[in-house]
Image (cartoon, rainbow, N blue to C red; front, top):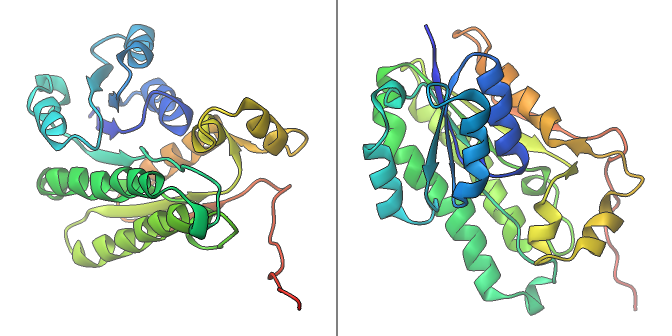
Length: 249
């Protein structure tokens, strides 16, 4: 039986890589995102029977509902929700951070994620499906400038554990994947387009790639139905843990 996955944030990074990996593995994939011009090549690569592009901003509830209502018959029964859409905005300390950036992160990483999850839970329960939420090590380990971003990812991880508890006995699996440093458009978005900052962060660091994370998502999705990975924290070997800060007189 061919299973269907809905993957948000599929226009770049982890999401785009996951669409490729799932389609190659024989899944049907609903690829969502704001930029139609980035979703169409995914459809072209695998055909409309394998990949369906659903163009909407996850923060737009009406557009989300319309896209779900318009799913073609072959894609209407969803077995897996991959909540990947998310972003970081800004690197300033909290006392000088942009409130607009904070709200954008909360609206995308938290509100949109819970809204889509809530919409799909009835059919995921009916189909004994699965939810994979993409969190971050930033939700576990604080760092300067992480403020609201780290808070949103801590929410994703805790929300996932709560879902797992509430879904007890339904057969629905829930997993959080918490990546560390991975080279995608993440830092470009976070710095509002500063390519030099992105290059500085990743140069010589041997970071993870989007394909690395896509492999983890597919691995979790393909596990036997009686196994659940609660949390999967993944970092490049080059990244580890820093010491505490100390302010001195």
